[in-house]
Image (tube, rainbow, N blue to C red; front, side):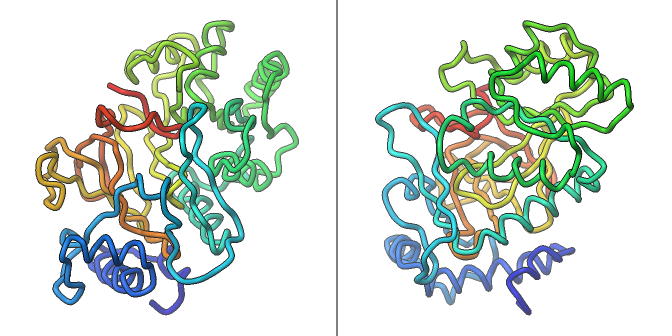
Length: 326
């Protein structure tokens, strides 16, 4: 790599694979936890010649170990949400600039210039705690939008509704992003024609309401808000990149992120497209943490950069940024 930020300029499969192998070797050399994990699996880094051969670190390690590549004092520590008594995941971020570049470039790739939007955020459960990577991202997008009505709405639905109505009247391009239960509350209390807006849910019922399938939830949103599609964001505390869905539950990854679906019965093997398995994520922006993470989500890969999330492994924790069980 010419520079760390060059990962955001990747534009081919060959280039992605080359950089992935470079980062694997960098992390194997400089991340003691990841190296121990590879050694436990008897992985010889010199024999890793493709991304399918790279071992993926179980995401649970972020709860019990400091996952750091190199020695550094983090500029930011992101914490996962969870129920009382649960051990949160910790993501030690060496350079917050990497996260900022990642989410702004991803938004640009999928939605265009952030300055064209008004960004309204309904994220009560995240605003009520410290260390949320989702709140950090949305806060930055709000600032970058430079729109006077952009902002968070914690306990003021009436003001949110008034702003939505004004924005619609002015034909302002608008993104309403919210956690599932907060959007559901809004849908049940108000009948709004938001057909001109982008409505994006980030998952996270987390015991606040009876957990619904994604299709049931999106059906309620569509009917109440008069929209044809509900957008979704796939991200988590342990990552510095996000995938987005513009409807139908099909997510697309940015150019520096990729999904590899592992065999449920043989976690060191991957499965073909359109076959269900565990979701492994390659996030090249995670260069100072671990770029190769085995999540507890179930899904299937559709094309090189598209995938679907089908639920969670039964014994996994309920994750704040996870999507709903289907």
